[in-house]
Length: 135
Image (cartoon, rainbow, N blue to C red):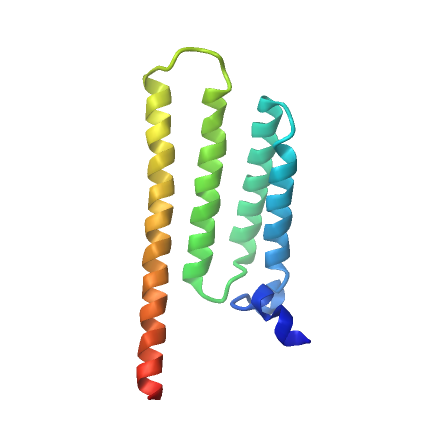
């Protein structure tokens, strides 16, 4: 029975085996918040993401420190994206600030994606090395 739930806590520290449930709850709360008016949506999303960032920094739930850093970068990327949306909830013409914010959103998300791809490729290389040693 335990092997069926392995994917939910694999890679986590034994004290923070529940972290995937926290992530799922965060995502469900963010989906529920999408039904609210714009300003309230941004405010509650910011509070939810910021709270989980603080908890993640405090707990450091993953055994591998790279996973903790990547999770933190993902949440910071989401926080920057949500907080930047405050600019777009106001009804005014597009100006330099909004263009700058769009580039900032794109940049932080590209940084996260590149870091994720790098860690994924590095992890696959490590597994290949292990399989070569086993052979």
